[in-house]
Image (cartoon, rainbow, N blue to C red; front, side, top):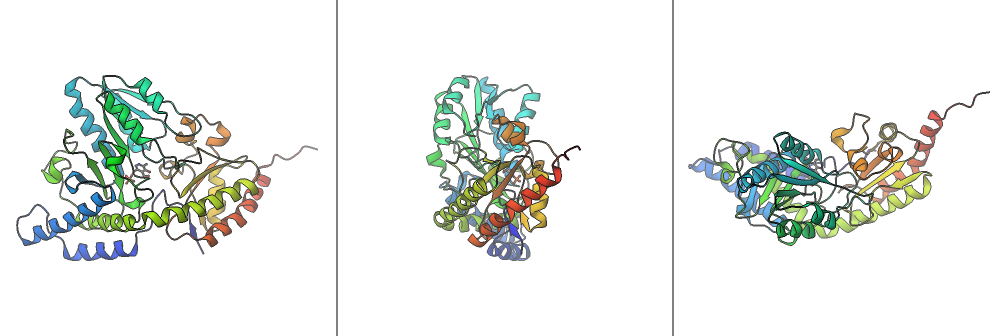
Length: 387
Ligand SMILES: Cc1ncc(COP(=O)(O)O)c(C=O)c1O
């Protein structure tokens, strides 16, 4: 029996998503820009998916731009909006150190092109301070990009308050909602943002499918040049089957949002409390609240995260250390580093991220196995006492 506790890395496609995608791959192969029957059939499938995504975000379908995932949505949001703002003389961008690389490395690339980029300082809560943003923002700021929920520690940012500060100074606000969509209600009006990114594979949809919501009236320069697809915001023939999958996943997520969150929060809280109590030298990273319901990130002193990850995998339990993209290297988590945590916390953290198939039984199994695995690893690395 294998237990998958790495849903922030990716989720298994919902069976209905897989079925509808397979059907679309066979039957809906027209080019959605074609005028004839086959094209219109593809366009109708895209329209349905667009309406489902819009409904998940309480948005208007005409404001949804389909992308090939979260990274692409983040790139189009930051590059497209910032470059359109440049004409107004604004050359400053603000983000924070706990963002996903999709945002951080895009900001670094903008800095190399002459943009002035500020990273807001973070503290150990992993929550961005609205006052810090107020002190940092200037009349030159073009765009502020702060994630909704963090992928490693799950903390949820005060987006509505942050966006209000950006708007007071005439800047645009983008949020990467890749880790919150499908886990928390995400309402673009209530959040008050201008741009919001999501990715289907984080809520039981396919990889390589995402969306960028762009508030009507926000000016963007096309990042990808080519055809006029997606209202000129994302050139390239739409990948209808995967976008059908995104639409079905969005519809399922919307229906389950009120029941699945509390269920996962109860399982996560039980797991977290039991681990902190039964394994000596453990600490939770980041604030307990506000947090997405499925995530806990725990540092385990005197055990290297990679060894613990392998130990758990051998016992049939899949977790992650830091973010999936940086696994495989022994680099400390950039998120925990940005929060100012010491090396023994940044290098020894593991993330449990729960999802649809997880049960109370799974959680009890992890609770029963983890202390023994940690003990074994600690004993292996204990420096022998010289005679
Ligand atoms: C917060 C966040 N943003 C962006 C991404 C990138 O999304 P994608 O893998 O769809 O490109 C991820 C994926 O891990 C993420 O967690």
